[in-house]
Amino acid sequence: MCEHSDDLQILLGLSATGHARLCPRQVLGVRMGLLAGKILEIDVPQKDKRLFTFSEINGCGAGGISAATGCSVDRRTMRIMDYGKMAATFVDTQTGKAIRIVPHPTCRDRAVEISPEFKKRWDCQLVGYQRMPDEELMVVEPVQLTVSLEKIISKPGLIAICEKCGEEITNGREVVQDGKILCKPCAGDSYYVSDARSSEKCASWEEYVSDLKLYLNNNHHIIPVVTIIGKSGSGKTTLMEKLIAVLKSRNYRIGTVKHHSHAGFEIDYPGKDSYRHAAAGSQHVIIVAPDKIASYHAIDEKLTLDEIVAEIKDVDIILVEGYRKMDKPSLEVYRSENSTELIGSPEQRFAVAADVPLDLGVPWFSLNDIEGIANLIEQRFLIK
Image (cartoon, rainbow, N blue to C red):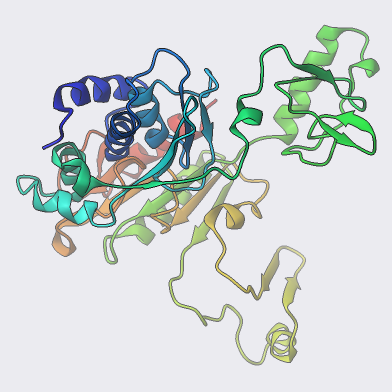
């Protein structure tokens, strides 16, 4: 049993307030933070800034760590590394001691073993992670930092001015390049590029803001991506086909992606000129007709769903059949005759279509209620 059971429940409640509900990753995050405080002999949640955390995951896991430790991005006592790992390194800034904590490789299976009253693995993990002793739940190792914690924390009041863009730089984040003081974006380390919109072309600030809003609306619309998932034979394709027709009748432009799990399939066929191009060695074949265009090319490695949908333009929504592990909002299709359990993640599931009523905390629709499903998708993803 967890040694911090009373504190654990309080901290889990605190973590859950920042999310739709409590989830297994929040439990892991809270348990990791409590264990770090115990080993480093620091009272957590801290009221000062002695403990610093490098979280290797964002979202729920980081939220749990923050609730337990008191470390946070806004207090500059947490840095998100975003490695996609449920792991974190905790540093005592007074002593320099650092430990990295990660869930034990067998903790998922062990959670199921000690929570036999639950049928779903998600529920087993949610409760099991609270019950398990630290030694079964976590792996802890001492580590040495390869980055300067002093530079990361920096000192208050440090200010520099970028000699290229003229913007202010705080916390010692400036760089010197060719003798000039620059911000990181101007030095070439940027996550954005400027669209070069200028207020000087407008008669007033109000006119510029109005022009800017119009420009953004016309050029920077993020296309929502919704996955339709379910076991083979559940009726995904049939439901998706009907859903496309209903949304199209409401004047929405639809893009679709179908996941094919087997390599080597052909979308062209022998005898066609385009097929001969590919057979001769063309890596990228484009077929153009007066009313449509088709393109296909060879790839060296499997693409992520984000990389795939980035190629789809001029649509209002993208419906994806499959890709249940791609962290996208999912409508799960369930047919009782060919399955005893759902396959999707509760965190991603926003609705379920099934031939039997299901109480999962999300809207349930019958398999034939396409209008109802379309209404939900329209309200949630299309009407702004």
